[in-house]
Structures are given as structure tokens and as C-alpha cells.
Length: 415
Image 1: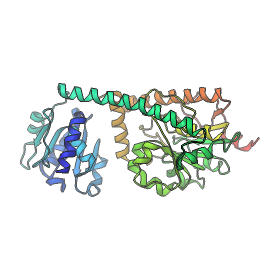
Image 2 (image 1 turned 30 degrees about the horizontal axis):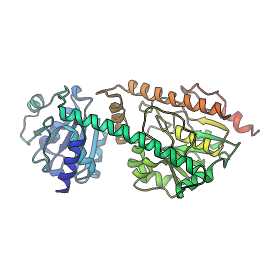
Image 3 (image 1 turned 45 degrees about the horizontal axis):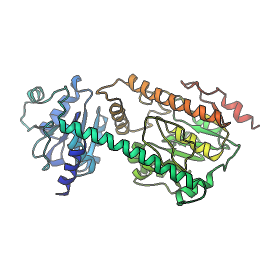
């Protein structure tokens, strides 16, 4: 009963996605029969390359090998994700009942029994053209968009008010007190912000053992190549937090800075964690007062830079900030930087943001780089206005907004 209630809520508040297909066999116990055959046939069909294939299992861990397949996502039967995908998937491929869920008019249930003619089933049941959006679904989309705008205005006013009082020593909680103690704690000093681009090496990080450094995201995957460890660490992406939170908690021992939204998504939270309020908006600006809020867009380096500004660092160096396509081969310092599931989830998010049904790797890269360059440009203007010098010590890459310097020259010249 509870499952149906939650599903009905999702069905009335989420729109159907034409490029999602959910598969469930033997009530989530197996990967067998006609359901499996349809899935494998669709994987091999170029017409379905833009589609995402969601498999529902009672124990997803037993079927992790499927994640090696293109655009494949595993969800646990009965979980919130499970109900959301049933509410949004255009097609349900099943070998029996759909758990008591009732499909919307724009959704289609496909009965893939063991003896089904898979080729005929695909020809007659699937379509690669978008469904006609009914008035009810248009209304849902409009209401969601309006509510998001109202919420953004409300949060902006609330956070600005909190920031005003907290900057004057009032209405603090434990988190805001930690932020206040950090303000100008490194005034006039220098630090290094570490990106995770392909140019990053253990040898370069070894040179920074006696420097203040900000690690980001999964930089810990280079720890086996260096004895360097970051002074501080920053994570802003909710995908990393929800999918890799336990790994992050285990590997990162430095004080962690994140956003409130990401902090709440962490299943296992590192002990020394400080969060900042943030606003979800494409209209990025450098707030300059993280007691109020910090807008994060395109790159975690925007969060790291604002924390460094808050701490009073006046000389900031970027390393490993190549500003290249992270989803291209060689997009990070290691090919094992992220999991396929996390990468696919990020790509799906980009497609949703761009309102695009299919994108090439090159198009995704251009989108990410353009957004990142916009952020770096605004950070550069803010820094220049406030007497903060920012340099790029990255070896190569596409980021030319900041003066280039050689890492060895900076490290050897302590003056």
C-alpha cells in the first residue's frame, strides 16, 4: 500500500521520459527469459542508443556486471528510485505483473514472455519518436517550474538574511560557527586548488607537501602514487555524494567542505565536515559571503575557490585544472576515476539540462567546458576586484584565463 502511495505521488509530479525503459524479470529475482532477450536486442540496436535501460532487482549487487553495458542502471526493488523510474519510464518490459503499479496513458507495458518473438515485439511495441504530451503532463511541468522559481527566491532571501546576521555574530549554529572561525584564518597566505584533470601527477603533488592545498572530488584515487594528502577537501556534486559517499568517508581524512544539499545526500558523513548553503541556478555569480550562500556551477573548483577567498588566501594556484572533457577517454588522471554508473547518471543529467535526446561525447564536452569557463571568468573578476591573485600552474589544458606559471618555480620560491 505504501509503495503504491509513493508511486502515485511520483506519477503525478514527474513527467514521462521517452528515453527510459525499465526491465523486471521474475519479480526482481532474475535476469532471464524474454525480458533479458529484449534488453540485449535493444542494446545492439543503434536506433536505441540514446535510451537508458533500468533493471530492477531485489539484490542489485548480484548483477553488477550489467553496469558494463551502455546506459544501464540498476535499482533496488521497492526503493524510491525504483518507484520513480516506474513513474517516468515510457516502456515497462516485464514477464508478469508490474508490482501493482498502474501505468499512465503515455506509458506502455510490454509483456516479454519466455517464448515471445523478440524481433516482432520490438517492431510493434517500441517507438523512437516522442510521445504526445497531454495537457495534464504539461500542467505538471509548468507547476514544477513555477514552484522551483518560488523556492529559489525564498531561499535567496532566507540565506541572505542569515548571512547578514551571522556575519555579525548572531543566530549561529555549530556549522556556521565553524565557518566564522575560518574567516581570514589564512589571511595573506597562498594555497593550491587541485583539479583532477589528465595532467595531474603524483610527482607534482609531492612538491606540495608543505603547502596549503584543497583536494576535490575523488583525488584520493591518486593517493597510491604519492604521499601528499590535501589540507582541505571539497565535494559539491550530489551524484558523488550519494553513489560514493562511503568511499569518500573512508579515504578522505582532511576537513571536508561541501554544500548543504550534498551533505544531506551523504549516507556516511565524514566527521569533520562543514557545509555551505547553495542555490540551484544556471545564473551563476560569486556571492563572496559563504555565511549566506555559495553558488556552485559546472565545477567543484568554484566551491573550493570561494572557501579559499573566505579563509583569506590572497595567492591561489590551480593545478590539474585542464578544463577538458571529463567524459572523454583520458579525461582524468586515471581511467578508473569514476564508475560507469556515476558517469552515466551525470551524462543523463546533462541531457536533461540541455533538453536533448542524444548527445555525442564531443557535444557533452563542449557543454561542460563552456560552463566551466564562464565560472572561471567570474571567479577571476571577483579575485581581481578584491586583490586576490590567481595563477594557473596546470601543465597544459584549455584554461587560459589566468596567468600561466611553472609549478617548480613557485614551490622553490617561497617569497
